[in-house]
Image 1 (cartoon, rainbow, N blue to C red):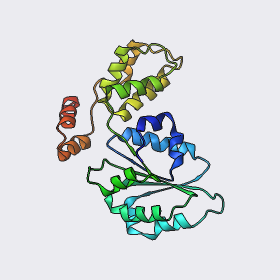
Image 2: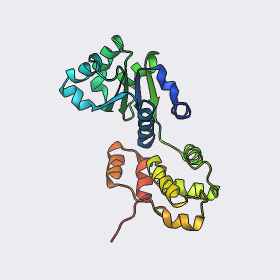
Image 3: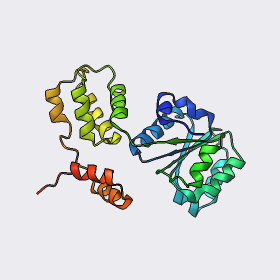
Length: 232
């Protein structure tokens, strides 16, 4: 079952209908936010985190968590990161023998169209997949308005400045929002102070530049090259 990310953002309870959810895509900021909100929602539940390589190296690791009940809490939430096709066999086993006391949230990069794992989550109504596509100006404008709801002084010029300064990266934009909340405690944004607060030019990590080259992503590469600042 495919769940639209913007619907899940508005109503996180949608995920409660599924004990096995795959959250995938290139939007790292959105995936991180969803994970954070899920952790808050199940804050009274035992939470365990793995990455895929741990489970592949120790096949019984996940089985033990699925089959062994905690002495203090009958419910569990398991987060597994860096998901790929390698774990599909284990996922098939979990779907065949579901455990209502355990929720599993899988996090991975974007899968290609031929991915069997992606297809499994899309076509099976007992599990769900949340595709996290890259943000655009419109989605980030809505995100900014939501995060700064109640603040005075937000206009289209400031909105454009913050979004362009972020390089359309939700994580960078969220860092700027946190700065605004700390500086403008009276919730009145003044543009003259804002200019000095934000990073006037978005200077990306060279790792991101490298990744866009390896991926052959021309659009992302061009954006990264235009945003980079070289120091003497």
